[in-house]
Image (cartoon, rainbow, N blue to C red):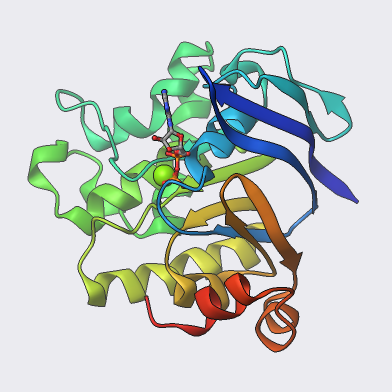
Length: 238
Ligand code: ADP
Ligand code: MG
C-alpha cells in the first residue's frame, strides 16, 4: 500500500527551478532515505510534503487523501529538524505534550501518551528537566518524542543527526532504525551521508539538481547505479 505519493512536484524560487518534476510513491512502513549533495533540493521537497512550503505545481497525497492545499497541522505528518527548536522555558514533558495540549487532548490522555513515548525513547528520567539541562543527544530524543507523540501517518526527518558527534550519530542511527521496525512507521529521512542512507533505508532516492536520479532498494542502487553520478556519489566516503 502507498502511504505517501509525491506527484509531478515542481518548485521554483523566482527564476530558479529547484525541483523538476518529482514523482515518488512511498509504501506503508517504508523507510525512504532521500540522499544527495547540499543544495540539490532535499529540504525543499520535505518542506513541501510537510506543507511548510508551497509547490509551484503538483500534488502531495497521504493515505489516498490529496493534502496539497492543507495546512501542515492538517496533514497527519510530523517533522524532526536538524535544529531541534525545543521550547526553552518548558519542561521536557510539556515540550513533548504541547502539540496534544494545543489540539485539546485531555490531560490524563496526554500524560499517558507522553509516558509511553518517553519509555520508548529512554528519557523517562528527563521529563522534569528543561532543554538547557540536556545533552545534544538527549535534545534530539526529545525532538523525536514531540513527533512520536502525535502518532502521525508519516514522519519526516531533515538531517536529524548532523549536529551530533560521530559516536552518537552511529548510536542514534541504530535507535531510529529500531524505532522504525517497532512502530512500522512510514518515514522519509533526508541526509547527505551515504553511509546513513545505506544502513537505514528500505528504499533510497538519490537526488541531484532537483531531479531524482534513481529510486530503489539500497542493494540495487549500490549494485546497479543508473548513471555515473549515482555510482560516484554512493560509492565515495561521506
Ligand atoms: P538541500 O536541502 O538539498 O541542501 P535545499 O532544498 O535547502 O537543498 O535548497 C535547494 C536550492 O533552493 C538551493 O539552491 C537553495 O539555495 C534554494 N532555496 C531554498 N530555499 C530557498 C528560498 N526560500 N528562497 C530562495 N532559494 C531557496
Ligand atoms: Mg537541507
